Image 1 (cartoon, rainbow, N blue to C red):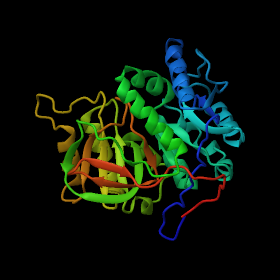
Image 2 (spheres, helix red, strand yellow; image 1 turned 120 degrees about the vertical axis):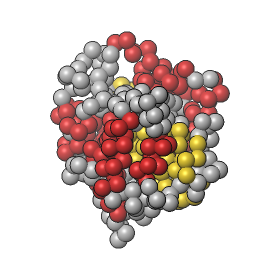
Image 3 (cartoon, rainbow, N blue to C red; image 1 turned 135 degrees about the vertical axis):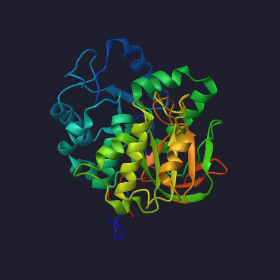
Image 4 (spheres, rainbow, N blue to C red; image 1 turned 180 degrees about the vertical axis):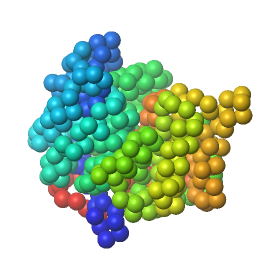
Length: 340
C-alpha cells in the first residue's frame, strides 16, 4: 500500500506478437455445445497475434457440480499458469460460482514476481478485486472467452468486431493510454458532472461478496475512485439492496463518480406496477451525493464488453457521455516491481 492507502499499481509487461495466452477454466465448466464458441474465441486471439493454448481442465464435459473442477484443482492449475514464464496472459473461458472457493489458495507471490493480465468478468470480478487489493495487480475486466469473444462478438456487426479486436489488442500490447472509449448510442447521463480517479468495480454482487472476505479492498481504495458495476439476473430489489450495502460500508461517500453497465435479465425494472427503472433506483440510493453517473455503458453480461481495467485512472464526463482511460494497463518492459 502507498501512504494514501491505495495499492501500488502492478502492471504486467506488454504482450508482444507470438506471446502465449492460455484459456483456462477459472470457474464454470465447458459444456460440449459451446465447443464451437471456444474455437471461435481461440481464432480471435490468434488474429490478435498471440499463440493460444487451452489449459488441461478446459475439457468439454468435465465438471464438479457447477464448477469445472474442485476449487483446489482450479487453484492448482491457475497457480501453475501464474508461475510458468512462457504464459503471458490468462483469459477465463467463462464465469460461474467458484472463485470464492479458492481466493485463499492463490499464489500471490507468483503474481508479484511476474504479473500477467488475467482477463474476464462475471465471477472473475472477484479475482480482479481481491488481487488488486492484495498485490495492486491491474484487473482486466473484459469479455470472457467462450460466451464473449466466441459468442457476443460473433453476433456483432463486422465493424464492431474489428473495433473491439483493435481495442483489446491495444489494451494488452500498447504502453500508451487508450484514451476515450468508443461511446455507444445507448449511453445515458444519469447525473451530470466530471470526475477523475482509479477505476474500481465489477459485477455488483461480487463487489459486495468481496468486501465480506479477508481479501476486501480497504476503504481508502475507494477514495476518489470511479466505481463501475453491472448486474445480471435476480430482481431490481436485489440491486437496490447491494447499493445499500455499499452505502452502509461508506463506499458511496468516498467515490468520485459511477459508471453503470447494461443490466441483463433483471426482473422488476420499470415494470407496469410502477417499479423504478435502473437510473431511478441508483439515484434513489445516492440521494444528495453530488457525483456524476453515466449509465448503460457497454459492459456486462449482455455483451460485448468494453474493457474496464481495474486500478487504471480514468476521466468521466457524464454530461458529454465520455469515459477515457488515462493510463496504459501494461508496462513497456519486463520489470515486475510495483509502481506508484
